[in-house]
Image (cartoon, rainbow, N blue to C red):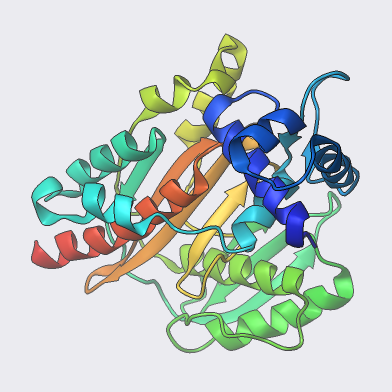
Length: 323
């Protein structure tokens, strides 16, 4: 856990790196972020954050850059959501009156690939949920429905087998019999287990859909213009992955109680997306459940993107309801 001045230093490194895409040194932090301590003290904090796995450096003499763990720590510490900026640019009815228009607004605001789906009806009721560890360490999430249909999906699983059984039990409580519900706090689970439970329930919800919603996607040009994608080979890999990827919210981390998901770098199930982060949120309408998502480099502006996705999900629900 990162706290106190170390968290302030980590936030400052993330902010600098998001803006410059260049390794960050102690002098830049002291000069531009008012750390209130000497460069030597900040260097010690940077070294400690590197030892804990929150920062790394690409070259021996270079400054530091955030790791996936570093971004995750900042997001979970309560990074402020940019609701003001997002609502002004995304959520006003006069600026987006269709899902296609909303995806374009979202892409322009965030400089990410933006996805807005139509609502999909919920499928048959779930009769059973089972989680089975696979040989590669992942877990097969199997949903059996009351009409006899069986569907499964493989999930990355960061928890041990003894907790996997508790997650299976909690997922069954949330999914079996009635309409798939929200995930409630469960004192039997560790924080990692609780996050995996959210992923499992989202997975079952996706498997339960009778129809895949159509999607409006905008902003691929914005995404590939980022410095991370100068290498043509990287562009090809990422473009192929995004063409195939299902970006509906499936975890691995619940940022707030309203179902906002953030998947950072190596947390993505698809290895080809290890350079990317996905921010997604479902919205509920009379005709079913849809979602809004942004895909960008791990060096994305998380406050802006999270706030924009939150606002856009509210606007998507209004557009569908007005239609």
